[in-house]
Amino acid sequence: MIERIGLFADLHSNLEAFEACMASAKELGVTRMVFLGDIVGYNADPIALVDRVADLVHAGKAIAVLGNHDEAVFKDYSQRMNPNANAAIAWTKSQLNTSQIGFLQSLPLVINEEDVCFVHASAHNPAEWNYVTDSMSAWNCVQSSGKTYTFVGHVHEQALFYQSAVGKLIRFAPHPGDEVPVWKHRQWVGVVGSLGQPRDGNPEACFAVFEADSENLTFHRVPYDHYTAAEKIRRAGLPDELAIRLITGK
Image (cartoon, rainbow, N blue to C red; front, side):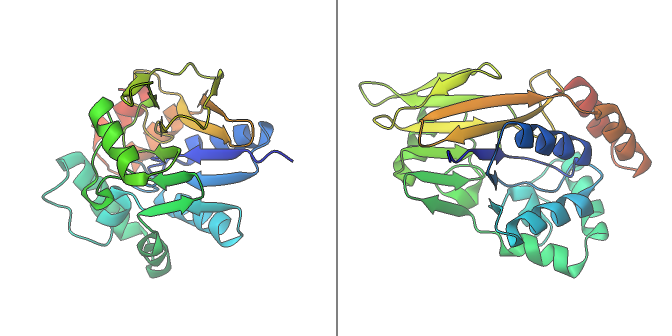
């Protein structure tokens, strides 16, 4: 059986988006899930998201790495985040219990498996939460991971960087649903986009599916009830700008 790995990043407490992506992943035959950090933050269902991810990890069906918003739950990030993010983290802390916070604390910064590296931000100094947005940051990432494939989140837009014949990492904008051949003789950095708060003008949730055996990577977009997710933000008393971001996808 071909292993199909579902890659999910920046869930950000968005239950509606999470359930829609899980349903889509099941239809696509995903056999294992990888959560690339930022389980919490911004949106209104941190309890549900932490519990669901923890259940999958404890059942051996998934692995997960730490994101900066997850770390902000148990470390002081008040000087490192903008006011809206800080407000959401303060509210999230008030919602989670000791066990749920403990699960977030237990998450590693990086997971390496054979030819693959999984990390939230970048494999280059992962605790500094650098963004992979251009050729140089992608090159730094693969140089540090040393792997054929490095999968990251943190950036809320989907992108794929591939190694050219001269070694430079070139950015490619994937089209949702199209299989991209990711041959092992190159190095790759896949930025899977945000499940819980897309920012490219399209409110549909993001995730990707990786098939190592067939050397394919497919990026996906999934419609979900983002109006309900936005209304939950407002009912929780979180900043209205966070609700608007879900509706506009910006």
